Each structure stands twice: as structure tokens, then as C-alpha cells.
Image (cartoon, rainbow, N blue to C red; front, side):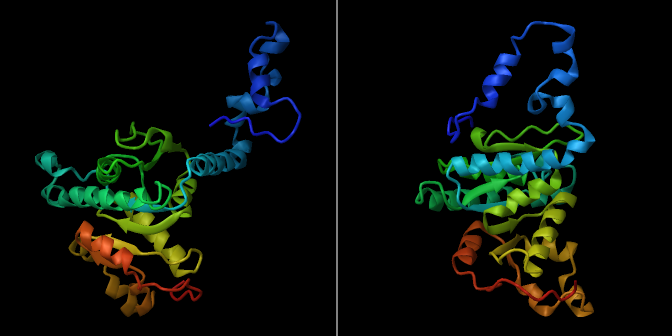
Amino acid sequence: MMKDDRRHPFRDSQTDIETARHVPDTPQTRAPAYKLAFADSDFLNRSELRPVRLQLELLKPEIMLDEAGVESTIVLFGGARIPEPAKKDQARTQTLADLSRHYDEAREFARLMTLKSLKSGGRENVIVTGGGPGVMEAGNRGAADAGGKSIGLNIVLPHEQAPNEYVSPELCFNFHYFGIRKMHFLLRAKAICVFPGGFGTLDELFESLTLIQTGRMAAVPFLLFGEAFWKRIVNWDALADAGTISEKDLQLFRFVETADQAIREIENWTGAGQKRTDIPGR
């Protein structure tokens, strides 16, 4: 990430960090106050520095994705617990075992989309997932199957979760703040694909839909894989019938079952059309 692209004659910060490591060892130089502020992790982790940490989490992936030439992405949301079909016998429930088919569809969708991405030199329509297991792994794996790169936006959780092995290492990021992570999912999004999942997937689904519904984000192809699952989890028609959303809000997304169907929907998308400015149900 480090580049010498400074446009000023001043001594750079990295040089001072290295120099400070070799100063004489005295009570003064050992004191916390003497540490360079930007190289002092204890200082940076103070509660008063939260705004700075938020900005750093926004800037680091943004700068590195720009340097990697990533111009647009295809977002894959989905459950970490959904196994690949070969391991469905290890699933905790029969429902999870049945949902394992979505692993293969996510993998195939990412493979097909990455083949298209490679035609742009890997700059457009790059697959981005949460970087974890399950559907996320399938998405990164499909991109690797096609010989392309993919992005993983991991997050520190109370239980250890390493990034899956298929994320491109140079495009694998780790977050502390859920909000900044979700912003990075959508900053370059050209399409959003949501596979069955749990609380985290539902959170990502509804925040993305809300941004589009309220005109805070341009409408993009928005696909829900597995109509039976999503209609069981959310009574979409009941929301419209109650008037808490409008009928046309149901046109913001489409149900799909297969990777091929999803590709066709994205290529021929006419659903949401224009950026939304009305906000019924808000």
C-alpha cells in the first residue's frame, strides 16, 4: 500500500516512525506521551478517537480498492452456515442441508460474473462478499474458479472467524465497525444478490433495500435467491397490503433460483428503473 507519491518536500511520517524506534532509551522516551500520536495504538484506541477510527476504516479499503483498479462490484450477501453440498450431511438442521444447493448457485454465479469481469481487465463487476464461510466462501470460490480476483470484507467477531481461503489476499479487509463495512459493500455496487441467511443477511438485505427505497442510493439490480425461502421468512405482500410499503416497492427486487437466471435478470434489468425520490412507508 505504501507509495512515495508525496507532493510536498517535508519529511514523511514512516521515516519518523523508524527513526523513533532508535532514539536513546530514557524515562522520557519510554513515556506514553512521547510516542508519535499516529503510531501510538493505545492513543488511537481511546474512546475520544472513535471519529478518527471510523474515518480510517472508511479510507483504507477505499484507497486500496482504488489502487487495485476496482471500479464496480457485484455484491453477494448470504448465510455463513450454509454448507457446500458435499458437506450437507454435517449441517445442523435438515433445512440447512436443503439450502446447500445455494452454495453451488452462488459459486456458479460468481464464476460467470467474474468471466464477464475479466473482459474489463477485472476492473468492473468484481465479486465482493463478507469474506467468511458458507455463501460468502462460495462467492469468492467461484471468482477463483474463473481465474479472477474477489473482495472479502471480514469483521472481527467474538468467536474467531478467519477469512475464507478464496478471497484475494490483497483485497481482503477486516473491520471493527459494521456500519462502515456495510457502506463499503455498497459504494461500488452494480448489483446486489442475496442468498438465504440469518440476522446478518437480513440486516444487509433491509438496509440496502431501504437505501434504494428512500432514494439514498441509486436503484441497481436486486436479486433474492430462493423464492420459497424468502416468502417464508418475509410476508412481502402483507407489508404492501398494510400500507407500510407501497406496491411499487415490491418491484425493487426480483426472485431468482439459478445463476443463469440471475445473470439474465442483471443483463435485462428494468425493475427499479430510476433513482427513487418518494419514500412511502417511511
